[in-house]
Image 1 (cartoon, rainbow over the protein chains, first blue to last red):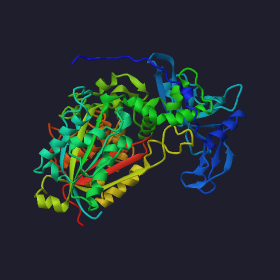
Image 2: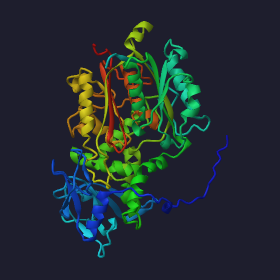
Image 3: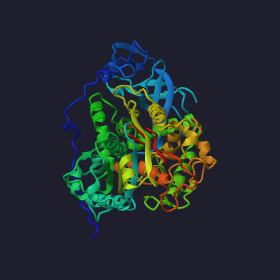
Image 4: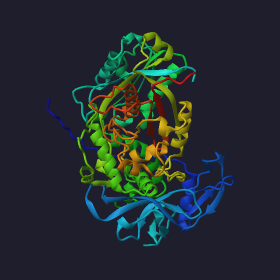
Length: 151
Length: 415
């Protein structure tokens, strides 16, 4: 049987999706970002600090409403290095996505990692700090990246 | 559970391969069903009920069972359909177990399959990300250059696993070379399994290290293929097994369980609190299952492990989380050859999921392979030669947070 291939051109209009997942956690988070603050919620029962902060504690299964501002410094957790762009072209400056545990929090915040020269020398536990866009507008993009503060 | 249950037969449709354009889904399933029945003295009409499943969205064909039930003999019989993502095969098997253990039925067939050439698994996996991605669009993420795509998804399915791999390597003080090494071992094990997909006899660490990085520390050689294949198993009650006179060459279900932790990797909506490499629930479930199976020391009493590893670092992580190896000691076990087919704890003699992955079948293939090892019927040189009393089979699904564990053994648990 001969292999038959057909290419169908189409577009995917992402703006067609008008629905929104309500997220008190992200509402609070982006509100803080506008003022260059990182806000989360703390469970008064077990003390777990979530960033972004949901309105319930997943450990205690109870409602929580205590808003806390957390440190803008923390420790690098895991990371992954993308050596190529989405089209597969090798990039000069690899793109590193990381998870960070900000001081005093118990959740892993995802972000972009900068401030390194050789990515092979990056280790879990290195200190990082949040770097902001010059102009903030209350959006996830306000938090530009996490900067390594140690070599 | 009230009654003991035995797996008396395991059948595959044939060798797992990338593409089967010559057949459709019912035709893929049917040979597995016929093989499983053909290995026993049973007739089709003695199967009382069926539990079947695949993971539709990963395959691209919605509800393929709609045509299939006639073809596996399920027409006018009790049929239950199950789909739970990566753990589908294990969930199908567990549901089949409960059908028998509860006393409702005596002879039940479990069938799991995936025909990946019908669609695009990566597109299907995108569907998991979309609700989170679309809700994030409402909160102004950075969409410049690659940031939006990579930042939101953590780099896709491999990207998500890469965080887990990095976290594991750090905890175990291991390097990417250990992942290369275990990946090579799985591909060469697969060469001894006539049903495995990616068979690479004598595959070496260097062969794997040549493959490109997808999302560091994971390479192309560390990822599973998308396979087409089906597995069928027959589960019977202890009473019926005795009545049929089949109590030799069977695998008894001694313990099983499942559990969930919160979603890991990239749960930016609600604050991710779980490290994807921690796998607390895997430890809890394993402990419970061992106690159900009457196993006091899993390191002494379990001889073989079949774990579900879509990415090669998991072949090192799961034996630790299942309590078979000390935390962080898998790389050492690997280096001294303990995980080899003739080692002290043979790990995935079948070649595992990184060699063969028909998603809806994969978690059941772990159980099926465990059963074949207990029965002494694994073909083509991947049968473990030393005496086997118990084998553990494991599966996972979701964002690494749903786990299933099963212990099969040579002798049933006393009731």
